[in-house]
Length: 201
Image (cartoon, rainbow, N blue to C red; front, side, top):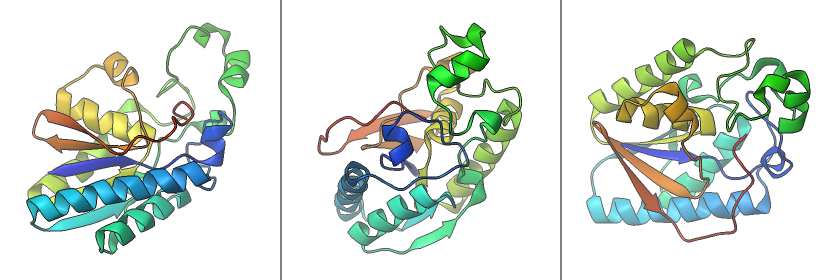
């Protein structure tokens, strides 16, 4: 069973910039989000028992989020796995939505820019590495916590649910929610409400 987490809000999230493989630190809100998620996971672990393991993307924002969650759960992060790293947005990284539309006016009405950059990571590359991690986690049994990013989280949920790319693009990417993935089911587990973060980047 997989428990999917998006990292807490970052400075680049707050200012509306697409991060991709770039990095920026968690904001104060992001730190609180990570702590609330960790507390919710600790409560689930106390209730359900069993073996729990935490894997995280190697990027700084997910490392910090995973560290906080691990502290709350009384665990150590098992590994920082590159298969959980954010989508490579290529030359769009660090740009705002308006700046991207300035380069690509045809995307002005697009609700999400996920996997639209022609020089970024492809659907096949992203889905391949994400599916590989998911298959490994499911085969291992136990409960795997994946601390990752908006794009990877969208892809994980989409693969579970058998969604099209357009349907995957429409998924929300909250930073204060736990998604439980099992087979073809995705369950949303709310944490204590905090002020809303910026839109996904």
